Length: 200
Image (cartoon, rainbow, N blue to C red; front, side):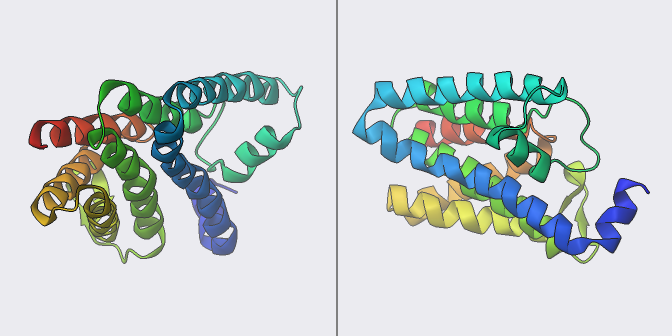
């Protein structure tokens, strides 16, 4: 039974899998708050989390680990994904890079774009679309609109400027459109953060 047929026959399983993936995705939204409390500890924890995941994922692939990290990975892995699952690694590096490369508020907007924009776009695109696909990168229209709205609202809360929030949302949506799977975890925060840094 191929992955596409499973997705069609068991939509509830697909929904819970995507929900688990995006719950992990949204969790990086706590990074700016933690960095505001203690920047160094936040960087150390993020770095340690990436290393911890890599070790556990290698153990999972070799059949030596059945811990919580392995369980979450198995719960959130799509049928098309084989071998090492890179999503959490690029997610962690995306948040870490934005934090290290950009000052506030650019770093905060960038990480929120990663957490909310990309996360919401994936869910909306997978479960709200009705076959309408944006030609660039084959992303769904509903996903792109959801990404725009999520980034706009989160950026507005940070920047308190409607025009800057609009430009942030447009930038994040474009980066989400042109980036490929997993790499978008790097492209969206780095691209959006760079644009916001230039504008602020």
